[in-house]
Structures are given as C-alpha cells and as structure tokens.
Figure 1 (cartoon, helix red, strand yellow):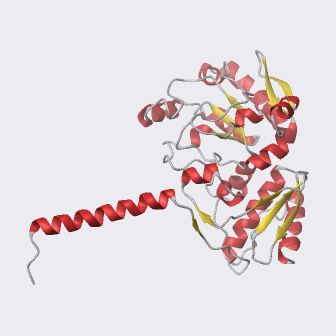
Figure 2 (cartoon, rainbow, N blue to C red; figure 1 turned 135 degrees about the vertical axis):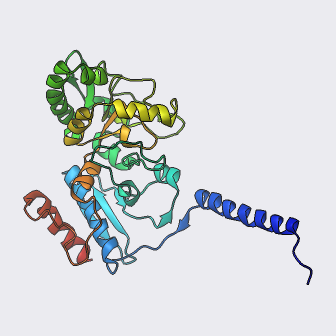
Figure 3 (spheres, helix red, strand yellow; figure 1 turned 60 degrees about the vertical axis):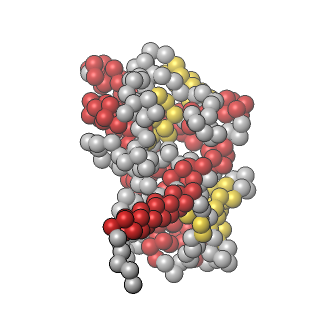
Length: 319
C-alpha cells in the first residue's frame, strides 16, 4: 500500500471538513420529521401541558377546547373552531420556526425575566415566533377588523392607538401609569421612553412576508436610538446601548405582559410587544419539569390556573 503523502492527507481533510459544513447547511435548509411523543414521555408531556396552560391563561375565552388524536397529535381549538397544532413533528432551523411555527416552536425559547448584561446570541429570540392564526383570532382577521379594535391610549403627552382586545390596551395604560412618575424624576428614563416612535402600523416585518406585531396594534416602539436595531447597528454598538438602557422601564413592561426586543439576539431595543403567554411561561415554568413533581408544581394556590390544569388533565388524559 502506498503511504499517504502530505498533499493527499490535506485533500482528505478538506473533503471531510466540506462534508461537515455542507451537512450543517443542509440541515439548516431542510425540514425533517421528528417523532410525535405521547404521554409515555413524561418530560415532553409536562412541557406540552405547561405551554397549553400558558396559552389558556394568556387568552381567556379564545381557547375553548383541546383535542388529542389517536396518533398522539394535540390541537388547541379556538373559539372560531380553528385548530392549532401543538407539534407538527418537523425539525426546523431558526428562520423556519419564525415562518411556519407550531405552538411548541413559539414556547421553545424561554424569555429571561432577569436583567441581562450582554446581548443574547443572535439565534436566541424568545417571543419573536408568533402564531398568526391565534393573533388574527384575538386581535382581528384583517386590516379593517384590526383598525376597528383600536382605542386611544394616553402616554402622557399624546394619544396612541392600541388594540383593546385581550386586555392589550389596558396593559399599556397600566405601564404608562407606573412609568410616567419615574420619567418625571429621571431624565434617563424619560429619554428612553419619549417621544414614542409608534404603535399601530399595518405593515410587514422588514425582509419578510409576515405581519409585524405593530400590524395587530399590540406593540409600541419607544424613543429610538440609532443603535437600537440589529439590522442597522453592530453587536458592539447594540451592546453599548443595552448597557446604558434603564432597566426600570423593562421591568414595568414585563410586569404587564410585554416582552422587550432588547432580550432578542436580533436586538430591537426600542420595541415592546404584548405577549402575555411568553411572560407567563417565563414566570411559572422557566425551569424544566422535575420528575416526580406535578407539571403544574408551584401553581397549586392559584385557583384560576388550577381550573385550567384540571381541564387540561381531563381532556388530554381521557383521549
């Protein structure tokens, strides 16, 4: 057998490296099938029930039933009768999850309620995945319907439009009520908040065919800074902006069910979006289920939550 020359070894290594990276790229572009687990996987089962509970708590009255098929697929049934699949069984990359998500995809990344000191990795964007059939069900099916659901909310110096459905406008009012006294006392807080850069705007997300949260009237952009947005600022510039941002503002918005774009790897620091389901998941279920404890552990003294817990248990376990 002829000995391997240095050149042949180098060529072989390059082939292996190229195959490795090609495999990564292919994996990022291709949706493959992943198994649908039934209740015999206790961790999967617990996480699924937690996610459904957060949805039911976040959108009371809009979710009327659950359905579990013989194959183990679980559907959330909306008031209109529309069914939302919990897990479509497909492996997806980050962009595929944003473009064609199931409920599991939306809840997969846990939103950090703690104060962050550094920008999150660019693939970590908790709350950026949206289930559009749910948003249309709750906030309006089209531009006209959404527009009819707008109400005026005072933000101190002027009125802005926000969606009245599901308590979104009331949540913004509560935020402003707490925020204004702080803004009067602190120039830093005032400068971060005012003037607002906008709320309701029926438009697509830049570079996509998907509606922005602003199109549903459930997002507000505060006073903008040229380093706020990942498309127009480097991560170094975004990091400096993050470090100087008043966290009191973030905590108040999160208290009332808003996620902050500053906690997205693809940062949008001026952006706040009403997503109570994402905040509830972070508040109640930030940690993985512990074997031996009920999946709803910690909520036993919450009557509203427990009413949904029993419904979820009876509906899914009896099918």
